Each structure stands twice: as structure tokens, then as C-alpha cells.
Length: 160
Image 1 (cartoon, rainbow, N blue to C red):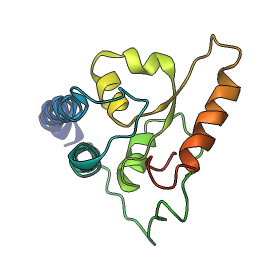
Image 2: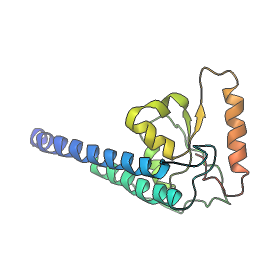
Image 3: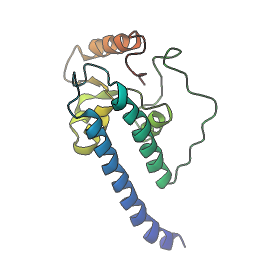
Image 4: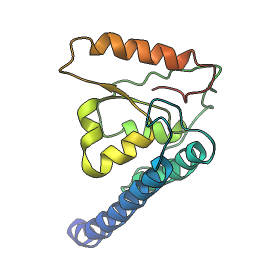
């Protein structure tokens, strides 16, 4: 029975995940097309709403297709209450579901992730704080950027 389910479900899930991933890439590309400031200014208006609603829904759908059902207890803190989220450990496959459940906040990510073909575009739409491992001042610059965004009085999304 497990073999039969694997033979049927695995290809079906792979096709669905691929479709969702390409749709997420398309949404991220549209939201960031001709973006003013190209990452130095926060996304506003329809661009931000598109990322928050569509990309969040697609991410949750992808995890559902993979067999994960996430139940949220309590409510997510608002931007004025908590401009910074902390999630640990933040180096796993499950980071995306945390982002989807918290409204697609900005994230802290290594700079190399932004150059990945499909995922890089999706990641760029979240306006991440990029950390360069080659730059000796990167840690200091990252802290300064997170602080700047947290003190922006709601102009930037929350940072996770």
C-alpha cells in the first residue's frame, strides 16, 4: 500500500509543487517588476498586498500539498507591537511556512540566495536583509539595516 501511494502520490505532488513554485515566481516577478528603489525602498500598495496575500497563500498551499497541516494558536503580533520576529533555528525547510503564517515579513538571508534562479526572485520580493559572508563589515551592516527597518514606523514590513 505504501509503495502504491508513493508511485501515485509522489509524481502528483511533484507536479503540483512545481506548478505552485512557478506561479509564486510569476507573482514575485510581477510584484517587483519596475520596482522603484529596487530593494532600498519598501514595497507599497498593490505590490505589498500582492506579496502578502498571494505569496502567503501559495506557500501554505505548497506545504499542504506536501502533507503539512499547520494549526495556528493565538494571533500574530502587529507591526507596531513587534517590528522584529525571532524564529529559531532559521536555517531549515520550515522557514517558509513561518513566513507565510506571519504575513510574509522581510527576512535575513545570505546574499548568495538572491542569485538562485527561481527562489531568488521569490526571495527578493520579500525584500530581505542580505548578509554577505565575504564582507567583514556585513554583520555590523546587517544589524544597522534591521534596526533602520524596525525604527521606520511601519514603512517596512516586519523582519524575521
